[in-house]
Image (cartoon, rainbow, N blue to C red; front, side, top):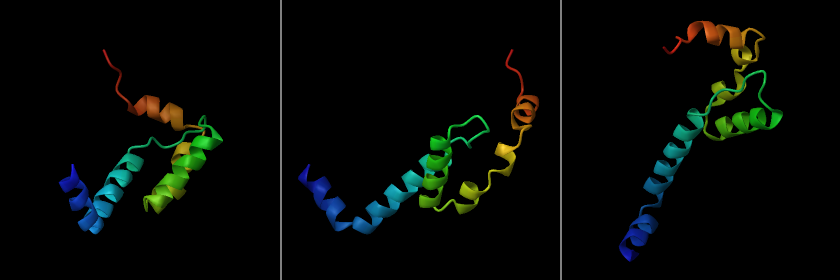
Length: 81
């Protein structure tokens, strides 16, 4: 176990970049808030996307906030048999 800790401590830049990449991927997988989403989720979505440097995704909620979003989503999603 000591060798793993030594590796992590001696390669902090690589470890930081890998951790940031994983964080960014997790945040990118968050579903966009809809009109029915709570304000807490909308805040968390925007905050985490800003931290993950997804500025455009954090600020662009025009489609998801539209009143026709659910109807358009239902129309474009194929029905499962």
